[in-house]
Image (cartoon, rainbow, N blue to C red; front, side, top):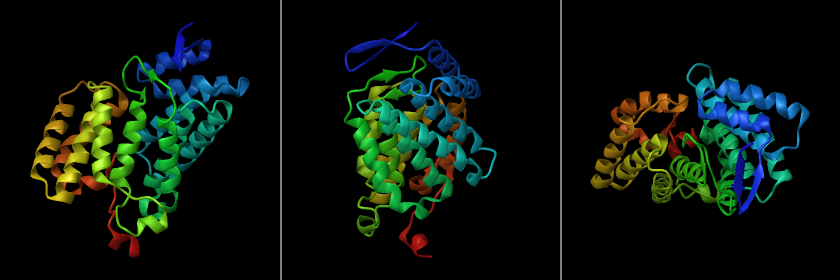
Length: 274
């Protein structure tokens, strides 16, 4: 069995969880889901299995987003959220449950239309900041998933995609902040400089900053990061999606603030008022 290290303690993963890690590292999303779904039927209180299944269901949703209508993915995210919440109940000092519950809620927002889900923004932000406060440390062998790298990624996307109008303060108690977005993506790239997704998202955030703040330097740096990401290996399923989308991001760079893997959002206050 492999040993996992968290908060200075070492413990063994169950063989089924270990197998799911092997499958996840190889990019076999459906195999990962299959192994973990079977395992949690008989062992429903294994925190390590629950958060990994939540993560795998999120990845299933990312792949389905390329071929099915957004609303059809909502049950996937509902189950991912429930699993992550249960993981938190079992181990509230681990950051994984908070992270993946927030990710599931965030994907409900992008699949439903962010402007229809603004009231959940502060709850999502709170979950991710809570995750970041935990001493959890983790890195998948492939580098595709890590902690706190995944939290930096989540917060970076949150502060870019959450509207930054003043009215957001009373709608949800929080608002977007493109400078925070860039900061978190720089932290993500520093945490794992070989992760394609981090480079891509930093590039998108810098383009967004450039157009919001009329900052030509940010635009130029954003293009550099996107081209660097495009040159990276892209064997993992979500990396293949990102690789295919980077040329479109560069083509539509003025709309970078509203980009996500599963679509483009009009985040203007005018669109909200319609």
